[in-house]
Amino acid sequence: MNKRIKLIQGDITQMAVDAIVNAANSSLLGGGGVDGAIHRAGGKTILEECQLIRARQGGCKTGEAVITTAGNLPARYVIHTVGPVWNKGNAEEERLLSNAYENSLRLAVENNVRTIAFPNISTGIYHFPKNKAAAIAIQTVTTFLEKNESIKEVIFVCFDTENYELYKSLL
Ligand code: ADP
Image 1 (cartoon, helix red, strand yellow):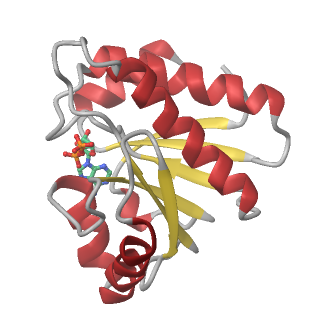
Image 2 (cartoon, rainbow, N blue to C red):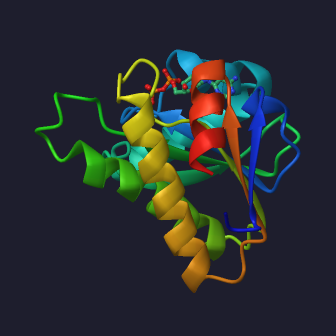
């Protein structure tokens, strides 16, 4: 395991890191799951910034990422990325999930982020199989860290025990 990768079970809204990643949807207007939790805890400025991004570029495509400040959260930024909806694996879901992690990390580097926390993107309402998603997340982050020195810590924040146990065994 890469020494810069950490694993915890918990609530990503409480993480005091440079950036937390949100599993958003392409509207950027908020939703359920971790998205709802981030907007509830972070307050309205996050949504206002998302609305500005929407006005400028019309939301966020699957696999891409945008950045806002983090409102009342202890983090400095929220990186909103859109994971794919699982559709039997026939719609390039694996590549798109990998893109969501990679584009979040790229945006983090551009914004001088040193510490970043990820939720288990697409494994809730979007129904991506958790074992496949964990393997893709770990692989993509590990490969990125091998070519990038500026990110000091990537924390996988698992909310549910099933994901936590999967990551623990894979890491
Ligand atoms: P998606 O639409 O990408 O599937 P969800 O928010 O439904 O997004 O689920 C993504 C993951 O986020 C799930 O594994 C879910 O358990 C987890 N999750 C939900 N709330 C939180 C939270 N407060 N902190 C971290 N992870 C969370």
